[in-house]
Amino acid sequence: EPEVTQTPSHQVTQMGQEVILRCVPISNHLYFYWYRQILGQKVEFLVSFYNNEISEKSEIFDDQFSVERPDGSNFTLKIRSTKLEDSAMYFCASSESGRTYNEQFFGPGTRLTVL
Amino acid sequence: KNQVEQSPQSLIILERKNCTLQCNYTVSPFSNLRWYKQDTGRGPVSLTIMTFSENTKSNGRYTATLDADTKQSSLHITASQLSDSASYICVVKAGGGTSYGKLTFGQGTILTVHP
Image: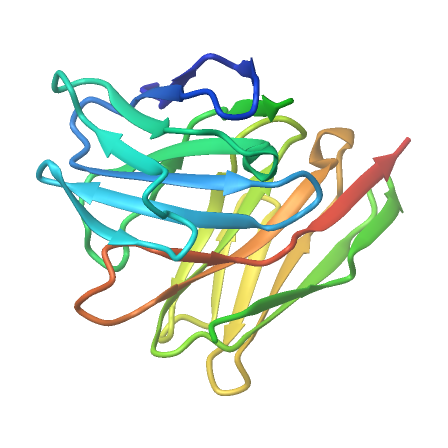
């Protein structure tokens, strides 16, 4: 069964460093999303992406964050200068369509630890 | 502000027993409500999706109900198994043309099933 994959599973970085989290969505899906979950807290929406541009973003998704679909299969989340509070589990998701009833399929997540 | 609240925060039951989890939301305009199962360290997996016109939906031993008037939903698990131990998250999607799939998550109910 097709699934969303994410790499790495765990990333440790120093404060101020740039990190890139990678995702491979399900191949026929056109809509892509990033979410994060700080330990012990709710999953929070970051950004949605369609047709090579951001379609919606939350207030969390500030200028330190960017997303890209560099090669038609990968979908990346870049954090330019990491802060301690960026430590969280980051989930990528994809969906076949943007219809209101669309099901989003989540990847296993990347645990980011900022020291 | 769109919010999703769940109760109880955690629940311990014995194997083969039934249980019911609750969800209240204040998302407007409402599009649909989903229940996800999240195993520790994994991404959420969809169990059910319901629109405002659906009162109940089943997926195997999982049955979700929705009362769009009172903005409440429940997830009933029948004949629980050890593998049901997980976090169960209520998620609501707002309607509206500018929303491309942004989901609002509850904090989850942590279910532990003991032998």
